[in-house]
Amino acid sequence: MKEQLTAIADKIKDMDPVAALTYFAETYPGQIVFSTSFGWEDQVITHMIFSNDIAIDVFTLETGRLFPETYYVWNRTLEIYNKPIKAYYPQAEALQEMVNRKGPNSFYESVDNRKECCGIRKLEPLKRALTGNKLWVTGIRSEQSLNRHDMVNLEWDEGNQMVKFHPIFFWSLDEVKEYIKKHNIVYNTLHDRGFPSIGCAPCTRAVREGEDFRAGRWWWEDQSKKECGLHATK
Image 1 (cartoon, rainbow, N blue to C red):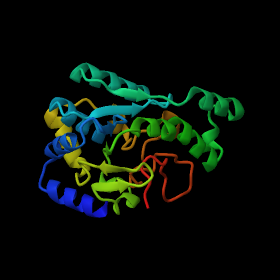
Image 2: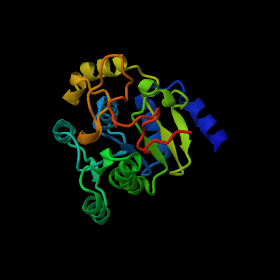
Image 3: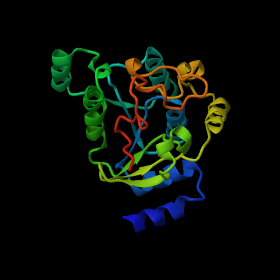
């Protein structure tokens, strides 16, 4: 697999993101998906896919705890492009059992509780969304957090047994913003209020000046790697 990925990476190294996405859509027809959470980066990639009619299915994880601003961007994106975005919800029984047993905000009480909530609301639905596919497109960028600097834009996801491609991995935040401005792309206004990374409303706050990009995610936890497990790193 490493040799195959090296060969593919060499093939796309001089392609722009749209050309690379088109190549992968043709290489993995009907087996390539893009996951969006409607943040800056994801809106850029959604625009690339939808405006160029690239055959990549777009999905999102509807955790049930998103910001109103996120729902607004979701709805406007559907209206603007008139393309489907498939929503994956938590399994009702698992969610009900957790909330009945621990209450609606148990994630504040311990890391284990938070991981359980992420597992039910995000990880299990993600598994269903990825099932049957061979390539997963994401909006990850290298500078988003320290542990992502060791990643590359094309990699093998051992946990999900599939290839992952990050088309704007090497872009700076300024490049993302400039692309959004140039193409008049709808984006989440929380970004203008100090939210560089936007997840579930109870688990996300604005970032203070000088803080790490992801300091606003699960801010009550004292740990160096605050990931929910969607994009596991080595």
